[in-house]
Length: 142
Ligand SMILES: [Zn+2]
Image (cartoon, rainbow, N blue to C red; front, side):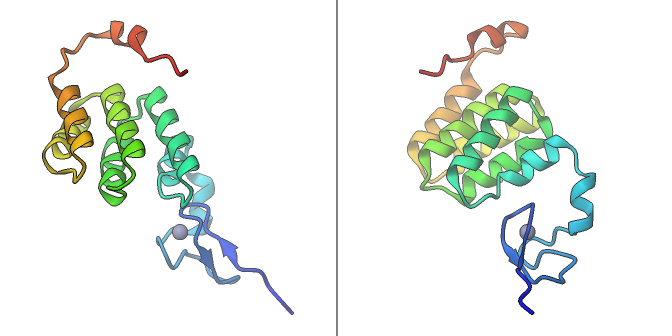
């Protein structure tokens, strides 16, 4: 009898019907239910569709999820030709702020293959930090 493959909830790869862990990313399927919302958003950064990744980036920025800073940096380096996505990552890291975000922005400013991304990261690093006032300066989506 045909048994459909499982779709990994973390990276969306196909897994054999009886697999307990994803062969692509190692996620234990039983563990997925224990993950909180932020962890699932962070897992969505590995989604193969750009639209899904972009939504996760935007929500992580709004929530200022500090745990997302390093995965966001890794995503920027994993898709260096997706400049639109990587510019969104720079903005998200600036929103999240904190030491890990500054370290991630520094790495992007120094080593991202796209000049526009390096420049945007540098701009965010040089921007004076407000405090809570920064929230009022969120760009309006048009
Ligand atoms: Zn997976």
